Length: 49
Image 1 (tube, one colour):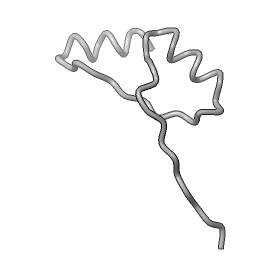
Image 2: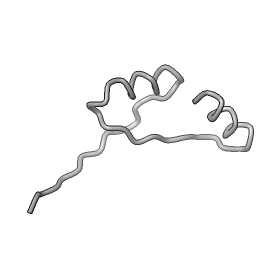
Image 3: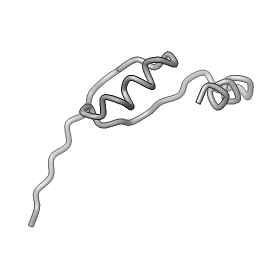
Image 4: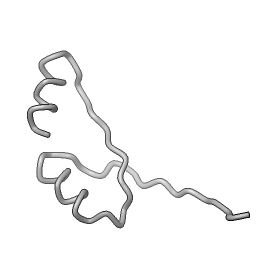
């Protein structure tokens, strides 16, 4: 993951975003360990028909 982020930075990207479920604790831990921070949480609504 770090190599990918370095590649993006080297090629002019200034920001990267991820979307992850808030109950996916292992993913949240991984992303935070490489410098990502929560910027906002989305709520989605659905109905099973």
